[in-house]
Image (cartoon, rainbow, N blue to C red; front, side, top):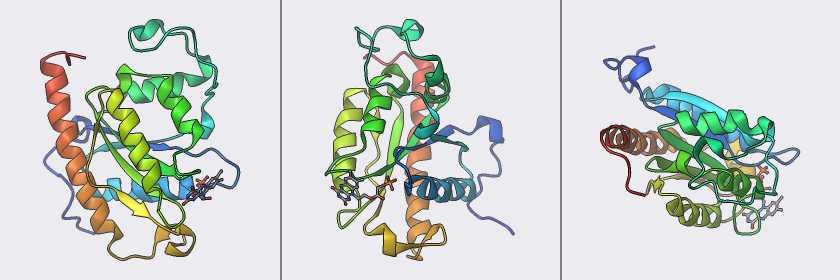
Length: 208
Ligand SMILES: Cc1cc2nc3c(=O)[nH]c(=O)nc-3n(C[C@H](O)[C@H](O)[C@H](O)COP(=O)(O)O)c2cc1C
């Protein structure tokens, strides 16, 4: 089927790399369902090379080394089981963080993954897809925006929010027929920032 959204003229290897992060790790979680749908929307959009990374597959201890990762570069002593996360964050030009809401914030797994890294987020755009009860994960996103700004990431204004996801989703997709259109808007904004910031990072080091 012809797809009018595909950026046909750009070789796939030139497209910015999008990393979709599954933020929840608990047993029976809904996060992977949301992330799969987002990856499908990114595929339809066609502007990215897309990878999904599930934090449940990564060794993320809560106890950090003595120093901050901010200045350590590759010398930061991360566990071997974290290597896939670090290299995926390093390679990414843009992120979609898929997050639920736990007690009016985001899961500890996500905070730990963020805190083990710093430069990997710098001068890169981040969009959020959240879900939860009545607030749809909005509290989680507000907190994430605050935290990621500290790491010099650029958070995108638009995002996708799914309140009461347990009635709003069926068979792995949202029931709202407008959802794919909202996803396209977010991905359009994200690819704009991803390309602009990739060029900027390649032109001059970010003055962090
Ligand atoms: C510890 C915990 C705290 C929660 N707190 C909230 C909350 O404050 N607001 C909300 O809307 N939903 C809350 N929920 C419901 C979750 O958003 C819902 O269970 C969601 O499925 C969690 O994502 P997950 O399945 O990917 O782990 C909470 C769930 C858990 C496990």
